[in-house]
Length: 254
Image (cartoon, rainbow, N blue to C red):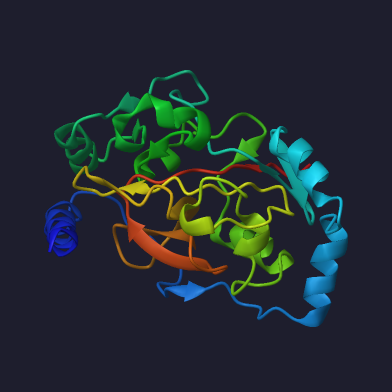
């Protein structure tokens, strides 16, 4: 009942604020990223990301680096953890439920720690609302940007397709019920959970959710990626601008 109540609160809250905040564009479908994995894809991924009996030693090195190259793109290996825009302007730290809801109502950029607990910062970084992600002052560090829907799809396709790619992307640790992956990509996806638009938190240890820079066709929503503890799917779906999600950056092309 508590879960249903949270969802009802979210729907009611979002309905009241969509009139005042943002529009959007691409495809509104919730779906697993395409490209069903093939034998060829499995072999490619093994070769490209050092799939071998020595992978445990490789992983120790990969996890302690700040970036990893997957296919033709370089990704950060940690969730974003900044409290300023690129120009130095501070981003609102919205701790209370009221502060978080108010930021959403005012279309104001905001961040928080999961459960407002600073101890979650080192592993999971910060959670941001869409207004921080989409702000023209730039959330990503210089030389990096928030990945688009298409760039997330390229990542997923390179790792064998949406049905199995999470196995290569998920970290070995912190996922509940032994739900981690083998992290052969070095991406080190962590289950950082998320924050509802109403201000409450959920699913740390079970789900990892990341923003893309691509908006949905439905006003007030944008496209995200979600990974789960109990399968290897990379899910493409949408969520409201006012939720709090992790951010993973991709390096600018040369």
